[in-house]
Amino acid sequence: MKEDKSELIFAFPSCLHNDVRSVLNLFPQTTGLTYTPHFFEVISCDETLYIPERIYYDVPSSKQIDLLSFDQQKVLDTLFTRHHNGFVREEKVKEIIRSANDDIWIIPYLIKLVGEYVIEILQAIKENLHLIDIEKIKVFLSENPKFYQTIESRVISYWDCYYRRRYPKKEDYVGFDILSHFNA
Image (tube, rainbow, N blue to C red; front, side, top):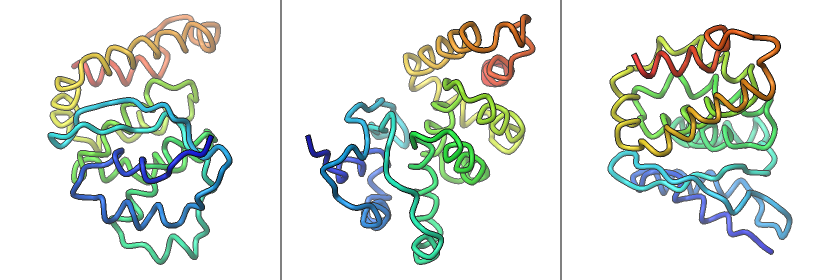
């Protein structure tokens, strides 16, 4: 089944659709698996966004990325926080976290990463939480309570499955630190 990459435009607010199209032009339209047809739905910037669970595109070359505008590079980096490779997600979260206050459409991507199992990603988020206006996060969470409940459940599940032996006290696990920050 061929997936249509143009659907990824709905992962971003409409004000960015031209930038998203420019970024998507870097990706080949193939018949192979390029992203999962599964999306999570959130409200951000007064719009419903349909963000992919995972994408399987190759990261564009540095030469291609250099041709993008600053905003297009943020779109690319944000989209690649959904990449199937955890190392790519970790690299890209470090790129976008500094922009979350100016570009609140980045916040759902960050929150989604909190509900994942790669501890290095969680540590990168925790180390940079001071850069994000907690009020902006709280507004997003209040608009998306079911989404946040899912994230909280995933933090518990991944701790229980993968990290409970390493961190017998929940309070010592980075995922719970981040949730505590959000809930403060």
